[in-house]
Length: 398
Image (cartoon, rainbow, N blue to C red; front, top):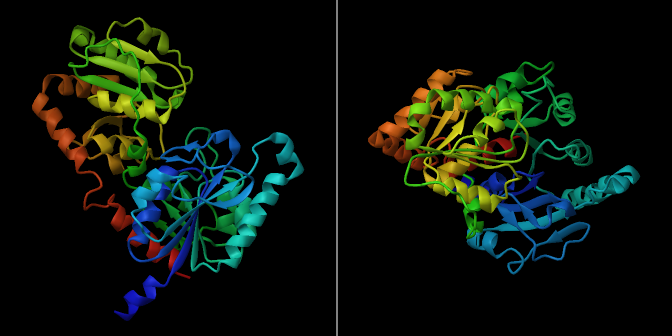
């Protein structure tokens, strides 16, 4: 009982450089354990009051720190359900001119000074944006933990970002979301293995707070199995593998649909544009459009050549949509083969086509995968209550 009383008096801060779709969930579930949570969303005016899983366009945004009230963020306030969570915006200018003058760093310095005066038991800094390294310096001496979704780049061989390098030098505690990324982190020089912990993230619950009625003319028969590829289109995401798989499935084209949605360029888009059973939305995808497409799909495809981890699975799990994914990066850690999706060998269009074909032909199997994805995040390692308990224990440690 005494330990529980001790825990209830704790006060922590979460500083989120993007990733609000996961960090707001974390804040809620930590607060459910009786801990006061101050949540700081690091923001620039270019977001226009919209971030993934978080809308604050009703607030009169100004530089510096501002406490948001229930009228300005009603959806999140409802989601927090009167828990001890206070939500702040820390707004700086994204203008190159102001950045050159150092005004963005000055704004962050003032915010961090205020945070220091609040005497938190722990501060969790989430993200690896350029300003994270400055935030680290301004909060030096506090009980800091960094959370990294990525430590370098799985695409261009960069082993560590500047903020990762600084946290290693200062022996700061670090949370990493996958064993795959953690192994890359531990390979870096001078890492203290006792100061790093692998803690995954769960379903992006707050995305559902902003589901809108989207008018999108998709000229397909959605009664057929519909495969969805979405997100920023980049070479590493394997549209060429998907194209080869779809070519193998040519005799089955009349039995399924394919949707490709997201901004970017890829040589394979020309092939997909020639297909009658394919709809291409080659534009930046808004959150409401993304959720709309997920709802109309049957299976989400990730034919990636490489990956770290992905936010796609915690998103599609909201609607119980299974995935077909290449076994790269941390994808095998979240895709449970034949349970919530299908894992296939990297760069193997024959295997990818076979997985798609099974989803087309075997309705019972597809239903089984959907049920498996519906269970994602319920009383397992991706359950937010379990994640919050692990996170709280680690960030409070000294």
